[in-house]
Amino acid sequence: MSVKQINFKGKPVDEIKITGSIQTVDGTISLNSETKMAGLVVPLKIRGTIFEPKPDYKLLLPEFLKANAGNLLSPDK
Image (cartoon, rainbow, N blue to C red; front, side):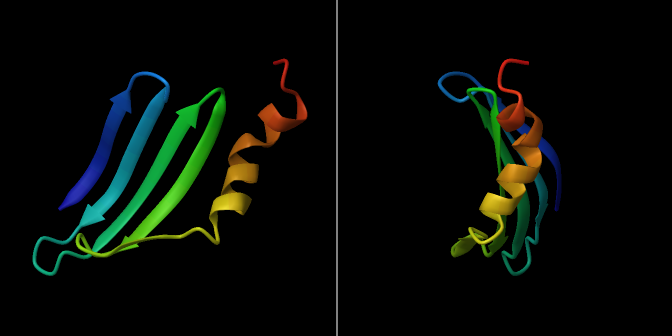
């Protein structure tokens, strides 16, 4: 099953987007989540299975810096 996009909106988190795939046969997941709050984007890749999801925390900081370089360098914009 392909997940084109799931959006959650509200407060205190502005938006959560999830894209990727879920294999219904073996429960394997390959998801990309993007959480927006306070003007910052927090991207997180999630792999593994439905019962044992494995967030990729090693990529969190580099992906966070890449997604927010403009906001971090020029916070008034």
